[in-house]
Amino acid sequence: MTQINIAVIGAGHLGRIHTRLLTEQSVYNVVGVVDPVYEARQQIAGDLGVPAFSDIDQLQGHLDAAIIAAPTHLHHEIAIPLLQQSLHLFVEKPIAANVEQATAMVRAAQVHKRTLQVGHVERFNPAFTTIRGSLADPKYLEAVRTSGFTGRSTDIGVVLDLMIHDLDIVLNLTRSQLIRIDAIGMTLIGPHEDMAQARLQFADGFVANLSASRTSYQAQRTMRIFTGTGFVSLDFTAPSVTRVTASPQLLNGNIKPEQIGSLKETLFEDLLPIEEIEIESTNAILLEQQQFARAIMHDEPVEVPGWQARNTMAVAEQILQKIESHQNSARPLRKAG
Image (cartoon, rainbow, N blue to C red; front, side):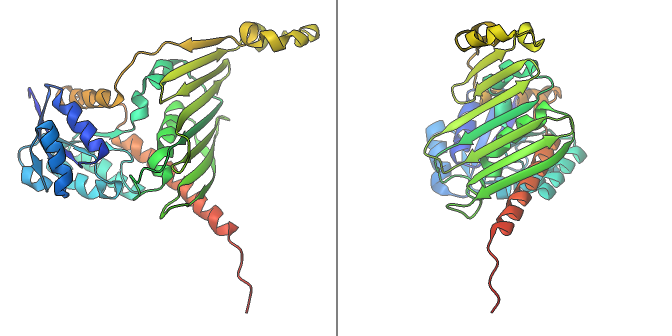
């Protein structure tokens, strides 16, 4: 195979980005963009010079792979037939609407020996990839991911829409068993939760606090990760990384009482020095697509295989169950009579 014949299913915001990037890479031949909405598919076709189709079945027999950027509730019904046709798939996050669907997709990919890659794009964000190697044995993590209301992805709530990005990173940072989940959420516009907070506790003591909102007046994609030797602050939007490293004197507890008075002026110079980490500018979605091509052509592993995304979905479902349980317990009891 010298070129991958590929289609993009879904002509929305992400579908447009994927199509444009694919057309810029010689390894891909974009056979078409597929969307049932005529205006949506024709706009991409006209702007990017690719064929447009209303149904993926129109391309049967002409494809090696597909990118699914359709609404989440359609991922499973689109993916299963394509995997059965032995197509390699890149599926935007979340992998599916629930664990049952995700499991079926993973099994189909295994049976037909096809690549199933999932678009948890923050794994490719340079803020995370630059610092990932120094985050062994995390102790505590806090993440805030907020946006204004865009009107997109309303078929799912904020847990599967936004929080799942940070949840994926948390599960990538630890192999310890998840032993406790607490979560609350609120529906403002609906029909699903628009704000959510979750606290995850792992057997080794690692704790992660995640906060997400898609009805915020301020956009934010930040994370702080604490280890035994300091902490890092990540801004996924900038992107940027700030690292604070505890000095040996601080780690060894060798602070004398007479030194405490002067720490106000020197704490972040002598004991907790601050470092701005240099980051190379990259396009995370492009990196995902390049890895997808290598997986297809050279059988290389992908950063986020389907089974990992399925496991992340399983934890997300537990968070949603906790939110529902909390909402039910908070409802006032009706008075008898």
